[in-house]
Amino acid sequence: MGYAQEMADRMPPTMALPQEFHALFEWMEANNFLMPSNAYPGDRLGLLGPRDDLENERLTSILFRVATSEQAKEHGEAWFGETVPDIQNTLVPFARTGGDGSYAAFWLDDAGCQRIVHQGSEGLVCLLGETPLDFLRLLAIGYEEISGDGLYGPDAPPRKVGLNQSYRAWLTDQFDADIPKTASQVLGKIPDAMADTSDDAFWLWVRKYQNARDGESAT
Image (cartoon, rainbow, N blue to C red; front, side, top):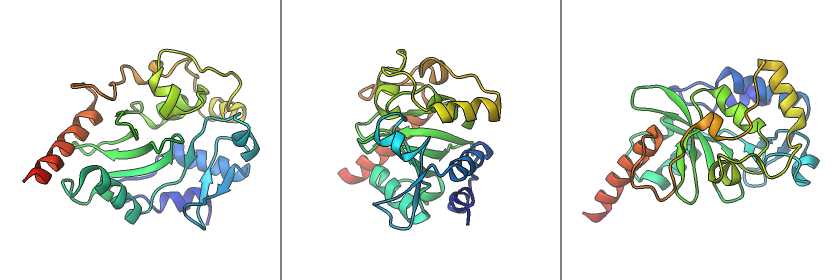
């Protein structure tokens, strides 16, 4: 089975793998931009270019792998306890966005709209664009880590230049997409990890269910 179809088959019945991701995963496999997973033997991780480029810091550090239903459930319950029924149908991690344990995930909002979100290990949570193509354009900017300089310095361009050359060429050719200079051009205002309030839809959702979790723990 091809990598794209393998990842698509892991999506819950409430969601679908976006066509933009399907094309991305096919491109990764066609170019052998995959590596074995150490954490999940038998699984493959999708890269934005050759493995050698990742190891030599010529790629944004992101590892694609859609979580299985069981893994998504475990991940979701670590964040929210049991306050979100069938969390594996609502929140599905699909990429490790940095060495700090942060993830990008597909999220089904309360209106039934599938979105792409960030779950930071240090508490930074936010939407990652309005569309799947927004997310792919964000990756093309060339930050070293989305969960690092991409979100913590969104108004600044990447510290390094020249990352993700093969991916940038594919993205512009495949989708005729422009590549932003900074993350804020795609994401707008990003809530601070210690913020008390935000208009970000995912931030509000996370706070709602974590407050419910903490309320349950206190009783």
